[in-house]
Image 1 (spheres, rainbow, N blue to C red):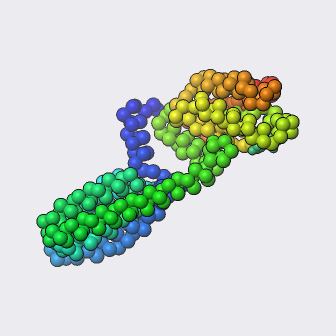
Image 2: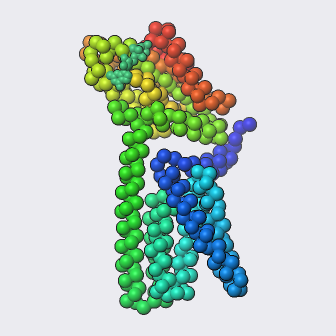
Image 3: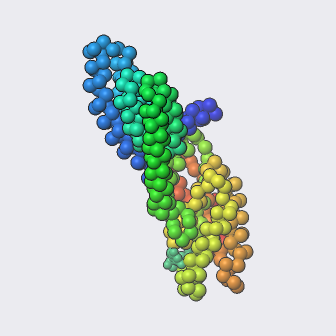
Length: 342
Ligand SMILES: Nc1nc2c(ncn2[C@@H]2O[C@H](COP(=O)(O)OP(=O)(O)OP(=O)(O)O)[C@@H](O)[C@H]2O)c(=O)[nH]1
């Protein structure tokens, strides 16, 4: 059954709003949202009951709404998912309203909770959203405080909450940079910069799933440098490394922004080309093959590559899809090397 463009857009928007646990930011957010929401639910539940019991039904309804957000978030986190819209349009505004309410009811004491809310934003939202939400909260809390606290207190409140917000931003930006660095190091091959075998499985499994939802065609190109053992034996390991670097640079020059390159073995590379037919992919692989064979990486010794090209099929698992590209590569090798087969 083919999907209409509108259905595809809706499915891809939903897929983007529910992020599966990833190695970098999502894993961190899933864990911190889980802790924050369990704590939030435990604190809010008795308050909700108390509000209804004491006849404050409006506040009671509001606190039950927050409780529902906490429970939904907890369930999603238990399943290893981070739900962006639930936090951005549920938890974050609920916190801001609570702060307004607290300042209105408690005055100066109510403003203290703003610092907690600022920290919470950085724990439940991706950094770029946390900054924006923190700025909105700062403005909303300051405007509310203007009506309920003394000017001298207001100025101190604004300066300290600005300081707290900036401190949180710099801390979390540094944590994010470190996480990204670690992630890059754990997912890429230091010699060529291509993604390593570790990341191949996650990427292809996730990609094959999305492709099944969107019903599109993509292609894998498996590259294997010919007689690489001889290069190492004849010219040394350093020259072998130089060839690997030069070859991955050649592939990178021919890649489009959505393509992904993996180093799957010593001299074996896999290029994932989303939304590409095998005919188009084979023409790009042919350009890569020609560029390598005509390059002078080792003077007087042409380096060649064999390639296997395989198109996706929604009835195939990612392993079968990859095996197809490997089979085509094997055919290229058997057929005399230095060629592209599909
Ligand atoms: N320089 C270098 N060599 C590597 C690296 N990783 C694996 N190799 C070597 O790559 C060679 C791969 O050799 P084979 O699998 O026999 O393949 P081949 O010689 O290219 O033969 P065909 O694929 O059949 O054309 C081995 O000698 C490995 O030691 C690396 O990071 N650097």
